[in-house]
Length: 224
Image (cartoon, rainbow, N blue to C red):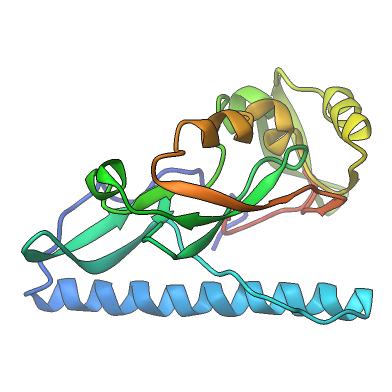
């Protein structure tokens, strides 16, 4: 690794791999391992929060997105790649997140023609209306007095004051975070959910009280 954090582009163009090949099987195994890692990571974070609060979990809802599944649709077994989407089979619960200043929901998949046409899938979040660079501007990491610091090359459209004003209005306490994740850059989740009433039903609506994220001054070599 060098001192430059990678961008949000893949190292290679998208490629279709056959699961009948050694390379395809290796990819599937690596993806499955990454899925287990994601589950463990979520469990770890939740357990840390529960310990801080002195609370216990009474229920859990897990669901992957940007992942692939082997499923039966129609009369054949197929690989379903859900990019920006998550499974929503009838009776299956899932979590759909909004922005740090909007609601999130726990949903349940329902049966129907549109649900079948969508291969029993639904959105995994509200979706962006503004790129990270457009929101936060263009920045680069440099060294000053032996420390990594960010240098603003071009300002973004969203200021910290705009983000903080939104969160104060919603009563959300923010620790860390950057303008690339401001509520301004996401669609409003209720509007998104209104377009999916034929494939999911809302079981619970969650409202954020506090948000903890890495700040803009935190160097992330993995850009995750």
